Length: 316
Image (cartoon, rainbow, N blue to C red; front, side):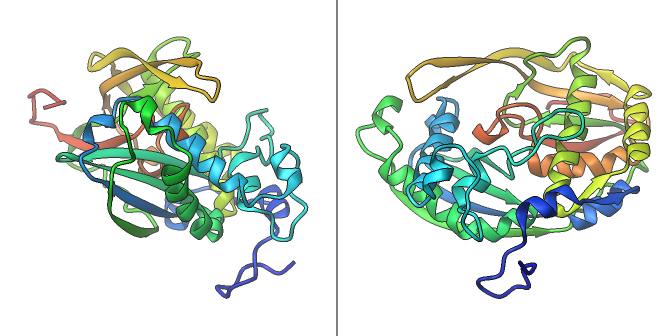
């Protein structure tokens, strides 16, 4: 099958593409390759739902809408035989396992943010998976309208959709290290730290590196083992202040009504020292978030420099 060339009807061979990534030795090069597309819907008067477990409902309704147009095999959790495969297969099924035994990250995430009294809810699709973006954007909306159980969130009906915005990011602006005394990793939504052993700060940066490297495959690339080791050693050399991280818990109901608890942190992490090439990785992680349950809106953060002379409160 031919690779997608921008015209309708030509898609890349998914499995072959993921199995044969291009080795990247400079994280800045990966930042230049980075692509994602986002569909954002504005829900009128729904700002109060931001912290009500909405993310889990959005994910399930999104996948439920995709399943309606899926192949019988994909609906059973098996590889889709269609050419190209259906969107449900791409966004729901684990496509491969990395040599380290980790599942390849799903090429999408969901997130939300309050806009005054309204709420923006978004689905973002990464790399070559963006060829299925139109299906994802429509299913995200259809899932909210036809599947999501709004009554479980305390509403009689779905909030009105006041508008939709489609956006495209091509390449990332990597912040320059000069002039920063420290960096602040400020979490805009709780970050899942379940299973963390040892300092949370180091684990968060390591997880960001692994997630970005996993999603790099959806861009046809992967960081070389030497680069990954150098970045890991760079994380170990940083000074990480975790006092701004607050413990919490996020409850995510499943389709059986069971509430799964995620151990989380909120607040901010101060990063001292010279992050160097890691800044390119963190620029990508800002787009794809960090930790578990990113497909439900967790792990969204903003990276910003703190000048050397700034001795104020980082989270202010």
